[in-house]
Length: 262
Image (cartoon, rainbow, N blue to C red; front, top):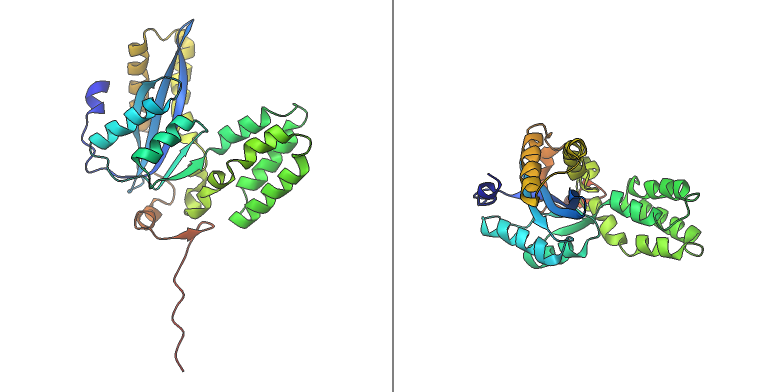
């Protein structure tokens, strides 16, 4: 069933937004299976499972194989925005196969990476200040909050702040899209939410079995979960995004009206 689904015709499908993540599942006590998962939003606002494949440590070669498979199936138009973690394999593959796609670094993953480089006593304070960045109402305000955080903690915690600073542009990419979509596109939460059921089933089973069995189980669970996925909030704005209408700080940029000639 999974292999047949992978060969489906995608020539009439277009994904405006694209989420990707590598999810690890214990197959046996001494073996971990990396599942490469992507979910997309169609131009009509429907969230769909795009791909789920076995990978190897989220390598570029594995992501490229997955993306090339989608392209071969007829998915030829680049998504407008892709959201993912810091795995270079995914971004390198996207740059080669869908070069027109803009990148958004997942704020949940980035926050976890930054906090991991800090003493536990400092984590709540920095986490609160990170929240001030991605909740800012404009890119300028977000950059101001970014600068304040870096100035405050770079001297004492350079490793953590370097992790944050290096992805500044990609972390703030969502400001170029409708504000109604921000909550959905600045993290890989759609994938994490979809996998909540799978993780519960895996814990109950303790062991998932063979690698093929695990992949088949995950695919079936995700297909089942897809039936309850909500339409994207503000889906009517996707037409504007598809047609390259520009947004600044979440609002549509309107051409200046012609002044009346006296």
